[in-house]
Image (cartoon, rainbow, N blue to C red; front, side):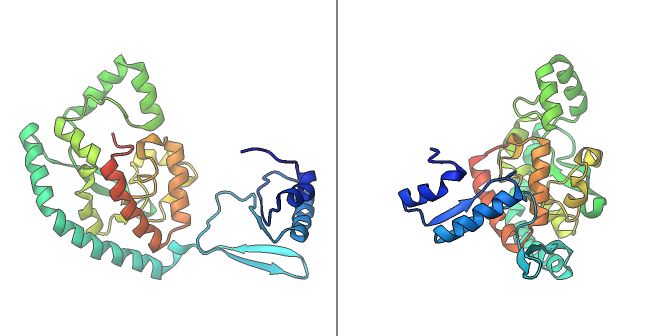
Length: 288
């Protein structure tokens, strides 16, 4: 984007270009200079919009208040997921919508179950402990996509492949070739159908249709300060991370995205993310 002037040139630039609407986005600018610039622009333009240097705060339901005597601006923010009514609304949405999805998916679940059993003997459904709301552990259901001795296969592979070891440390996944994954498992992962049994976790109240990723108990320490925010709500089958790049996003980036979701939750966001998930699954973006 071309630079047509400095902050000291704003009057001349506005006169020359005929600009009517101005957006001020100057993070790090001295407060006094920012106030003077805003007052100046308010006098010579039709509309002024100020982007405050407060990135990361909740945006949904924010209210602006001011004190005339103190010339003080206040931002009022609500914790939507602290409201019993909102939590009840989210649960009702999960149960009703999840019940419909479970009925529609039943034939698909049966077919996948049979295909897994045909390729590799053993249980077709994998259950592992994950952290739910408030950090409470539960057994999370997934279709098994790996060979039974996958831990041994992974250990041997990482010892022989330093690049894969670095990738594992950064993403906690192997985004390319993964020797642990079965043939049917590759298809299930690409289409995200391996997570379909989690619909029963939703009906049991352990998960939500939309929410943060279900984290492993051993990942709590790595989540650092984000854990307190992310674990305020049940994990979801899908969520903002899944439609924002999934495995293309590293672990730290995922924490930023999912803590934003919790702080800005609304039922409309959940509905929007469900529809966006359909497009992501079809395009197979970020799926490994």
